[in-house]
Length: 155
Image (cartoon, rainbow, N blue to C red):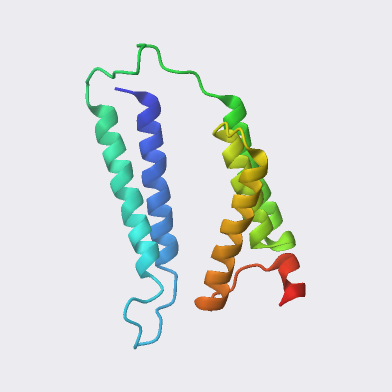
């Protein structure tokens, strides 16, 4: 049994349970809502519980794991892991201060660096374009509030 995979499975299940507890505290929407505010969080929680169960089942199966050309597991790429972690932390730190577009653009750029992209300028442009499209789609078309940051000056 792969202990690391089992720990990961338990963490995924715990996250799903934590989300279920949080979702239960969301107030119900108006009576005319077809789906309601709890639907998608419940769907995500159910997905996490299924994913965690599947991961635990796979970890408990006693089968030979075949890797590409070697039987040894590949070591963790700490640089890539650091880029992803830094991207997440900067997104959390910048979201309210700089706004959704800048925070998500920085996170996209760092994620591209984590996956060894050789074109950082293109990655920055794509990150800004995707973030701006998502921001305007959610805020203007769907009427949802996302942190505008410096975009408030242009509104």
